[in-house]
Length: 342
Image 1 (cartoon, rainbow, N blue to C red):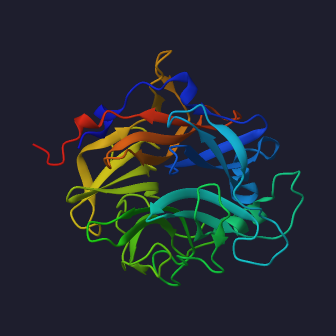
Image 2 (cartoon, rainbow, N blue to C red):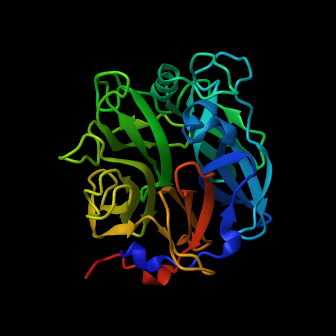
């Protein structure tokens, strides 16, 4: 597969932003009536970009077209509701899965010490929130909710293993044998506050609500740097599995730091860089202007059309330090897909 050749120009209306808010992530589904729902993370712009770890909530917007324009509707659920739980303060990293007649929203949840929400958190508080991150799932009969969250993480940490400190960045797909495959980011225990290596791993379940059974070792590591990859997006197509991942160091893509690499697998367990490993770099191919270089183009997620082919790539954008982040949808020309490389 040559993912880079699938990218098409981005219409101006395929950009979603909110005044006063940082917008991040982005995962999309469709209801039975054909309306589109965009789930995204947001937090107050005044708190600064790094407040994603301490202030984020998940909200949703609707549109009649997968490229938009989308209009904000509401938060998915209320964080900081006073109820003590593992995800009581923050929700982030939404990833939606329609399975049967129900919708499953995977996310990162966390909690931490109280602080003045009108101010950025101090360093110790920020790292406490980051290191309490775990993966959860909520279920609903309709994309607009109401949503029922689990009382515990659907994918917790495994002490003394490669993901012993935190888990986040969930992405899921239905595997060729009908199981649910989850790929996620894990951080190992290590020197505070950052902990150890940052890698990607997989887990399988017979049902979207779990239980998920982890593979014992990470699926993607960088032999030259402990911070390897994050932000996976996994899917099953034909007899193969594919995953997009942010390449922290540019090690796999041989391109700039933070570019996105394409990996592939025959079984969803053993992964290797694709022959055309550079999926995309940090440029937006706008339809109405020349390609724009940005500081971050992250959190890739895919929307699939009725035939099961990837039709839209969703990404989060930070143009430069100090700017307000937003989401874009990039149309894909999937007739370029080659399931077997020549």
